[in-house]
Length: 233
Length: 178
Length: 178
Image (cartoon, rainbow over all chains, first blue to last red; front, side, top):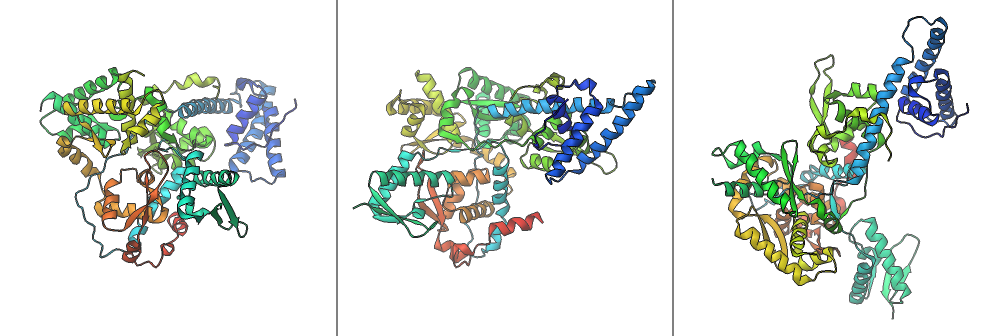
């Protein structure tokens, strides 16, 4: 039987084996150990060819499969009342499959969202005044972990916190028009209030629109330098 | 304290505390003159008042703890006002690890690794950082390995009242569709 | 939409928004089918319901904007509950808020609250009073949130020539990972 494995990243050897079984529509309770071993080994060879680093778990599993394969040939030949050498692997795969499927259930559940929204805790203070005499930058540094934590959370977390709706293009056009009318000329950077990518994009789009309607003219000295915006005369 | 006042004190506590809180903790704030049973009764009364009248605020019960939230029926409006941040879901590795902990808790890292066939250190630390799992003591074995269990935050995020609300693992013999 | 539903939708909006919000903004969330007058009426009805019954939650009206808060009558209980949980004294909470503003300016209150996980109104007003931060315009979003930045006084108090003299946050990241 032919096989076709794209070099996708697997979570581990069990993930790879399970995928091979699903792709080849093999009955998990009656795995052809030599077929699966061959496919597993050729996947690893592909990885080697592409200079990908092979995790030790994959190598260990490969040697286990080879060992199982030889034991299984012996087992078939003698047909004595020994335990089928495949049994342990089959059991592990079935357990793994159940959890993998269950994780899909949780994934679906998470994507749906619970539809309810929460508040932040209220704050309570006793004191009112800050002592401004003995302040140093070192004291601020103590709080940097909370800033860094925020970064991590953003990298890998749930949409549990909701933020206020972002700017519409129409609103931003009005805002840029207002600033230009008031100040006559200003730079693109002066229009941006946050590091928010969306704000930058929407602001840029507003400029394009205002150029089209001939309300403003822009000027840029060099690539990537700040854009100067002037009211069209 | 009269019953109606207890109810309103609890209402202000649930509102201000914002996170899940147990009847026991609420009672310790109100004082010795009432017992935990009275608190539970008052909360349940409050809950059904909010619930029956389809009020904008609801009281969630998660594993014996209570927390105020908005009514799901009005999701479309609240959502319009608070736009969700970019959806960032857990990676497959982290999600699989979380699933195993949810079903097998309390469980050690080594046991999880046996099931998944790979190292899970990274996934476990991500889950701890995001408050989805926590340590639950240590196993009395060589190395005293840490046991992990899921948190109330886990239940909240996945919309479960209790950990028992998870479907039986045996029902996952067949693959479910995304 | 029926009157009772409007009231409850508003209730969920006030609960989730947490900050002061105008009837006009609430109406823009509910939709064109009702007018601002209906919204004001519904809010006022809701207000008196909460008020007359000495409920734990109250609706404050501040300069044509509405905000939910706890009933002052029950302050002693709410205080008792929040204080022991609060490890940070005023100086700590305020300094943390100041650090976030220093590194992320200009920034809105809501963004600071997302990082800190608690409301920051008090910390911000203390910082403004002490001239360590000031307003830096408003964001064109629902509620027109104020942007904050640090002042020259801030630089002076912390002995900095310029805001760029603050230690780079990235170098700090490496340090804590090591």
